Image (cartoon, rainbow, N blue to C red; front, side, top):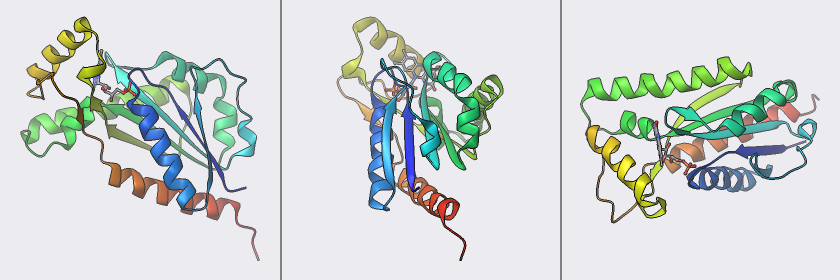
Length: 196
Ligand SMILES: Cc1cc2nc3c(=O)[nH]c(=O)nc-3n(C[C@H](O)[C@H](O)[C@H](O)COP(=O)(O)O)c2cc1C
């Protein structure tokens, strides 16, 4: 069946936007797509009905959401049976890695850090997705309380990032996500095609 589940965890809501965007793109490609919040009070989804899965989590204080790590550990075998799977790690560090205005050595360090968190997630959960991708996240100052705003501004400022707290910043490369959705739709169609 041409059906994909997009599982997400989020703290400030940007990863929901990424999950919904991917699902909408997959639907445009003729793939049925369900979006699922792993932190909700839920009956676990029946993963056996999907031929593709996206797992999207964001980084806070150098860690992915604990509820996503625990979901993947608990559902690892079901996830492993799905033919096409993608893990997306959303962070500001990846935004730095993609920022052409940053010095190359700083970008390389950021890329290594973002990849390190992905490796850590894969090692910790034991799940081997078909593809992994770091995704640049957002700075949503308007959503932070004053303590969080102060902390984030300080850390971001130390790394040469955007510190005007009167506005929000979206660093996600939405066009790259469209390409990812197209690749995934192709892979799902191949996986579910009946040989002639
Ligand atoms: C309190 C806080 C801590 C964060 N810590 C990190 C971090 O350690 N490394 C990083 O790259 N990004 C960090 N970020 C940036 C988030 O990963 C980014 O804002 C992401 O878009 C959040 O996604 P969400 O809205 O789905 O939770 C942090 C953001 C906040 C608000």
